[in-house]
Image 1 (cartoon, helix red, strand yellow):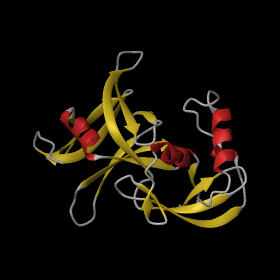
Image 2 (tube, helix red, strand yellow):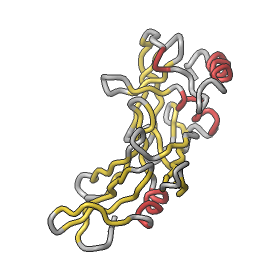
Image 3 (tube, one colour):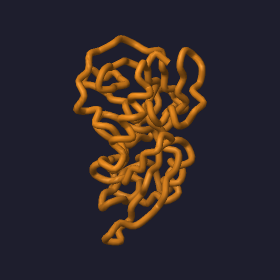
Length: 199
């Protein structure tokens, strides 16, 4: 690949391991020169491709995701200490593939969300969940904040896990928010009529 220092990047990640809760390099501190676009694309279904070919090695995808940054211009970049290259993201750069119900230290409900690229997210005020509607179809598109300006889309199975656990919240006229509690906060999965959430 034209990331000319993959070996150096691997060394940097190894050095960062243990200094950061998730072993992530401090991409927010790096300000290398912009080196142009690289033909890497994150597809809507979570696949990463390079020059039109899917990247099959999960370890390489995790490596690339660990140096992914979204800047104030709204674009996504792979950032190392020596270079910054723009990539294309079709929807969300990360995907939640698993949800797990747990309890926090105060025995309050807590949802843990796991991404395809190895993040473990505690759903709560620092990692809020929201649901948008897909234009044209009204299909729910659930997202969760991961870090900095990066967010993840919940894939179908983890979203349905939350839907199965949903309970009524605030009423808005004849409709009701249904959602889940996590880390002391209620996260709406949608406004519905009656007592049943239908995604």
